[in-house]
Length: 356
Image (cartoon, rainbow, N blue to C red; front, side, top):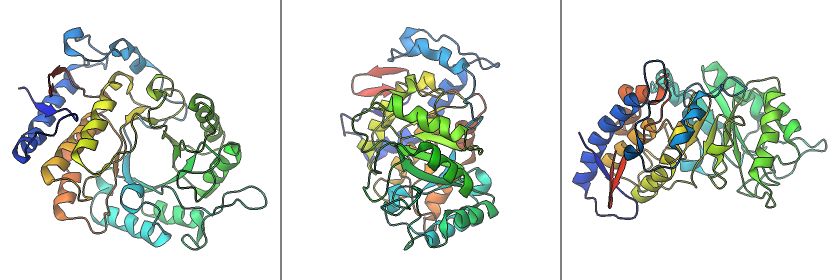
C-alpha cells in the first residue's frame, strides 16, 4: 500500500484528501516502523533507494548506551501548558489539569507528565540567587504543586532556559545558575525539565546544554531533560549523551502547513532516535481548533510514528469527546511506545508528493 502526504510547499490537498492521508499514513508508516529492524532490534539496511536522507549511516547511533539518567526508554507522554495557555498559567489550572488527566482516562493510557512552561517564576531571583515561584499565580509554591501532582500518580515538569532570561522575558534563565537551579528543581520534586534557548548571548548550545545535563545528574533526582534548542545546530548529532529529547524544529503553529513542515524537518533525523533519546518536532496541537478533525488525526498519527514526545497542548479540562477519543487511541499510542524504538520515516519523494 502506498500513502501520499503533501509537502508543506504546496497546499492543494482538499479535505477529503487529508482524510485519506489520516487513514493511510498510519498503516504505511507502521509497516515501515516494523520492517526497519529485526526481532533483536538491529537496524536492517533498506538500501539507498528507500531514503531521501544523508543520515542513514548514523543508524549506529541507535546502538549507543542509554542516557546516563536512565530515563526516556519510550517517548514521554503528558501535557504542556504553552500551546494553549502561553503565559496565562496558575496553580489552580495545573491542579485542575492533573485532575482532568486522571478523570478522562488519559493518565491510565500513559500520559503521565504535567508540565509547566514559561512564566511560572518571578522576574528576579531571591537574595541567595534562587528562582522564586510567582506569588500571584503560584502562591503555594512548586513543592506543594509537585506533591499534589504526585498524589495523582503523575509527574511534574518545569521550564527554564539556557540563557540569561527565558523566551518570554518575564523570568530568569538558568545560564550561570545550572547547579543551583538543578538542586532547586530536585528539592521541589520536579521530574521533567524543558530547557529553552533564548537570550544566550550567541554562545553555542553545545557548550550550554551539557552544563545543565551534568547539573541534573548531580542533583540527586532523576529528571527527564528536554532540550528545546529548535534544531539550530542539529542537536540529533550531539545531544545523544546530553538529554532525553531534543527539538529538531522551530515552534509549531496550529495549522496544517506548520504541522507538515515540522514533520518534514524532523524526518531527516530519524536514524538518531532510540530508547533514551528522541527527536522532538514540538508539542501536539490536537484540539486547539486550528485544524480539521482529519488534519488532527494525521498530526497525531505522524507524531506517534515519528516516536515524538506526545505532549498534549490543548485544554484537557474542556476538550471535546472527539479530541479525547483521538488522543486515547490505544493502537496509535502503542506504535509510539513500542520497546523497539525505531522511528518511522518517509521512504521516497515524488515531486510534490511524499511516499510514506
